[in-house]
Every structure is written in structure tokens, then in C-alpha cells.
Image (cartoon, rainbow, N blue to C red):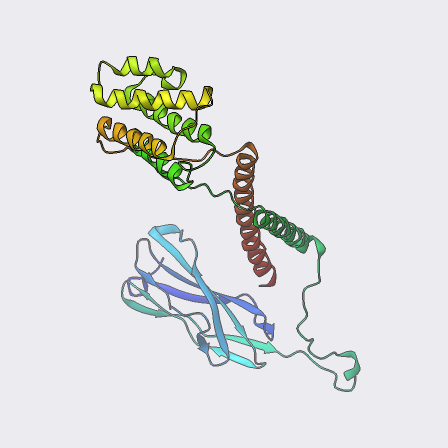
Length: 343
């Protein structure tokens, strides 16, 4: 049983008193004190010298074991090493128990050097150079085949690009078509008749045919009935209810002259042709409706071949994009894999 003056004791043991250079040895420091006592062991940092030439590698606490009479054994272990062959004196380990310091006995450690027979140097070899790891195909096969796949993908993408470049795009433009009013179209056609000098032409039948056709188209668009399919008298009768008699008389005279020229081989004078042309213009001007012409967009219709060409270009663009994205993903993975193999 411990006395009141010696309520705690500290002892240190070493598992081997002799080691070779670079070997390790373990020192156990045990403190015997009352259970629940505050026991603080020496704290050494890694590579800290416990004495010149002997350094601490690590240290750790072990389990506390209770003994008789309310006492317990607190154990702390230190792992030491040395790289210089000689006999070392390990100073006592100071342990604090409830604020009071208790010391163990000192220890001895002998570090032995490896004996070398200098007369037989041929049996020893010098330090080896840094050697590379052996090449293993299994480590690099995935990287190699992925690189080949990336090259094939890029070649296919370039070939599709050449096809896309040679396959010219179909450019369709939307035209804004200005819709002319009936009297504007009729007067425009009469200007063409005048420009072609058909008034003075010997082919009077062609002149009156174009002039009356222009008037028929105008009347059809202006009044909304099929004047192109009606006779001259039917047109006059249809217009009697809406037009003044003077304008109709002049129009009737023009149609009668035209019918004589076209069907009875009647010959007219130049001034008569001029008068009929003027009468046609006056009739149009008297009966025209002034309104703002409509403007509507006109989108040209694509042929079946052009539609196929447009679809082909879209497919080529989508394929090229997908291939480039895939090639980029493979490249990133290959670079990462090579980096991991080389480090």
C-alpha cells in the first residue's frame, strides 16, 4: 500500500536496449496514482530530440488499468529512433500527477552501426538511379483507343463540314408585293401599247385585241363580273345601270370598232385609233376608284429538291455539332487520364 507521502510513482521501461541505426524502439512510461487523478505525460513533437541523437517518432496514450485500493496505472508510449551509432543516456521522464511532478529512472539505449568489411568492396553496390515504372499496356490501352476514336470522330466531322460547305444553302427572300388597283394596271398596260407604237401599226387586229382585253380586265376587276367571257353588247348592258350614257356611248363605239376590225376585217384610220385610245383612258379615269393599294408579303415556294437540300444542311449541322462535342469530351478525359498516369 502506498504511503501518504508517496501517493504516485512513475517508472519507464524500454523494449530493447540495443538497436541498429534507423531501427525503432518503444519506451513505456507508467504512472501509478489514485483513480481519477489528473496525469500529464511529457509532450514531444514528431522529430523532436529527447536527447541529442535520439528523436521521437510518435507517442500515444494507452488504456488506464485499475488496480487494488482505488489505484490505477496510467500508461503513455513513445516510439524513438536514432541514426548515429553510440550509447545514449535517456533522461528521466517527468510526469505531473495532480500538479505535482514525479520522475522515472533514466534509461540507456545503445545504437549499433552495421559492420562493413572494407576489404571486400566488390560485394557492395552503390546507390541506384531513379528508375521509371515499367510500361504496362493495360494502363495505357484505354487512353490509346480513346485517342484513336477522337481522331476518327474529328475526321468524320471534317468530312461532314466539307459536304456542308459544298452543299450551298437555299436562300429564300420574302418580297413585299404591292397590289395595284384595277385602273392603275389598266393604264399601265395602255402605256405599254403606246410604247410599242401599236396605234400606228398596220396590224390593227392585234392593237384592238390588246386594247379591248385591257378594258375587259379592268371592268372585271372594277365591277366584279366576268367581262372576259362576255360579248361587247353584254358588257354594255351590264354597265348601263351604273354609268352615264356618254361614257357608255364612247365605250360602245370602241367595242364596235374593235369587233369590226377583228371579225370583219375593217380598216380604221390613224386618228380613229387615237380617238379610241383616248376614249379608253377617259372611261378608266371616269370609273376608277381611288383607294390605297394593299401590300402583302409574298414568300416564294421552295421546290422539293430545295426542301431536301435544306433538311440535309440541318442534319449536317446537327451531326457536326454532336461530333465536335463528343471529341471535346474525349479529349478532356484523355488529358486527365494521361495526367493521372504520369504523376
